[in-house]
Image (tube, rainbow, N blue to C red):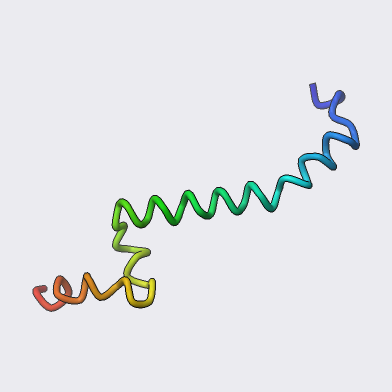
Length: 58
């Protein structure tokens, strides 16, 4: 199967790399927004304010 991948296939895949990374990054940020994954969200400026009250209760 790998023997059938030619230069044209590799060039086409390389052309879509930046688009794939953009959509993947957007999907990851959307996941963080909807799940409020505290490990990452506390490091986002202005958005981490919603967790400041939780840290004071500890």
